[in-house]
Length: 320
Image (tube, rainbow, N blue to C red):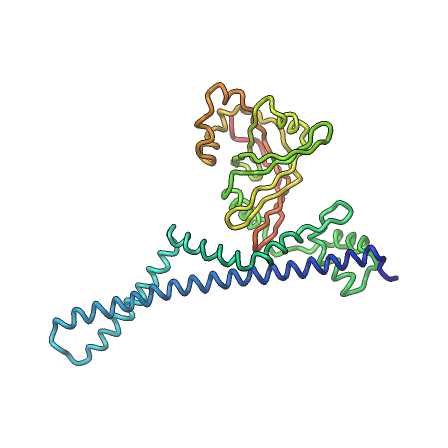
């Protein structure tokens, strides 16, 4: 039985999505290749400078000594030693803050060069079917319908894919490490919520990470609109892109008033959001409402990877 017109259109969109994602992956590979080549060129240049310095030092010393046969061998040895020391120095320089900034500028130029492919791939990352993001199952659905011709509807192929999920090669510990790395690069989050009438609103807020995976704290004034919206427990969040284009997003979030006052989480704000506490008086700190945000799962999206991290029960808070 042939696919319906609706399913044919869906399959067409899925194919277009895969093309965009492959284009994005090629762009990401080109960026990585360009960075590796740039790093090697920088190290090689410092190595050449080291070799030249070794040769110059030898010639300067040798010019004060009587001419000896076979001195070219000593010069060659100096050149080799200078090149080795130069390469080691180049690698050390790239590991310093100056080197990190140099590589970051190069990466920024490469991302600008491939911006269209990267942004197109990001727009096509989610894929919704019947109000559900089925992006993890799209390759399987295409394979079952286009490759094996096993099913004649997207619904049936999706149901089978859910029963037989493809296990990725990325370990949960690595995904969690990626999440923690991205979360540590920002303290801003866009929090979307809805009030009792269902009216949505979004606000850019500061957050701090706790010692429990996937548990953050946010604060708000006691009589603001956000306090009423948070008390409904319905929120979604996404972090603005970092300098490397990484974001964290989730709509599987629990939010509740924390059992601790602001002064007991103030040390987290001092460490993670410098200057946040400086302008708050003691009275304001006592009045500030602290909300505990618990992520049940989250999407971690970078230019190179797109992973979903699942959080277990974070356990009780160590803040007393």
